[in-house]
Image (cartoon, rainbow, N blue to C red):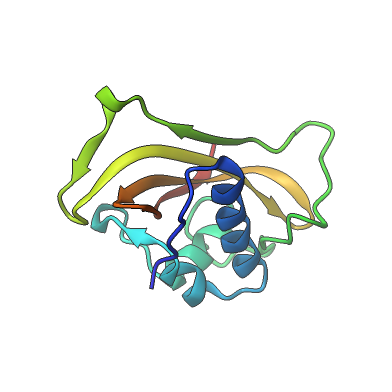
Length: 145
């Protein structure tokens, strides 16, 4: 079941994202998948998430070097790449109802992933959806920015 966030505080939302990343670091792809909503357009599955991470943004095609998400707490900052994170709420005029979920799209998240022990330019994007007094995250993309 997707995680419900009962606050619009960006720190609480970031905690949910970091928890999701920790699940990836532990290679718990099924659990990470279940914590988010999904748009059929992106065709995510636990195995797709794993393959795209192993292939550093592209489906893993038997690459010799496999990439792996590592814990954000232990990831080092590469001299060329500072971790990028953006949690952005839309103004009321730009919010719209997502008919598939019966929820309102209220914002977006872009968050870099730590790969092989260092922060990378491989990022995850989520939609922030609201219904009543809680928010949920919808996984959009895992790609290089």
